[in-house]
Length: 256
Image (cartoon, rainbow, N blue to C red; front, side, top):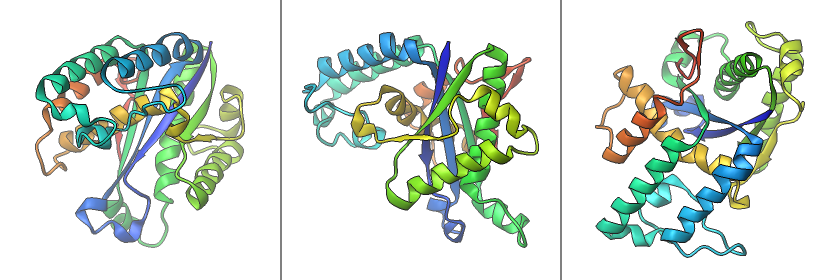
């Protein structure tokens, strides 16, 4: 079996913005799935639910994007109807619960990070990616499998940052996972970077769960200033069975 972890980012890595409550946290969420399973189950079932509720054509496919869906922006404007939204939410939650995938979320308090390491500090994005991929390697090792990594494209310099951070992990490793272990279990020394507009099911799945997962971590640590929304709570409930665990310990959530 070959696995892929699809990575979605919530927030930004700018430490200078960490004093702003709206930009204090950076989180990376990875969704791990077997590539054959993505092809034969997740992708066709995701396309089927799009066809059921929205106008989706192969030449102009509907792309799931959580923010647009929450705000019922086109092409999700049909969700302004309460009955349609309830039916869609139920269908989507059913799929999330049924699909076979594992989730790992890493959330960094950039403000605390900046205050603690005043003289030297990790780049926030690299720090989160390192912890995320360490756990992905643990998963692959446990599954006796190999895999690669795909992240959502942010364009231009942001993509260069993504690729450089990944390359650094491949060549240098971390304090906990040596470079040769990354190289043993990851099949490519290059990070795959794609946009969701390519209709990549794994990236859309990561987008759907990344924000609720980040909010769950903040809520557990008393850092979420608002109530969890009802649909977000349903996603979080589903995720409890999806978070990666190793030797009975929770490896699917980490607050830095």
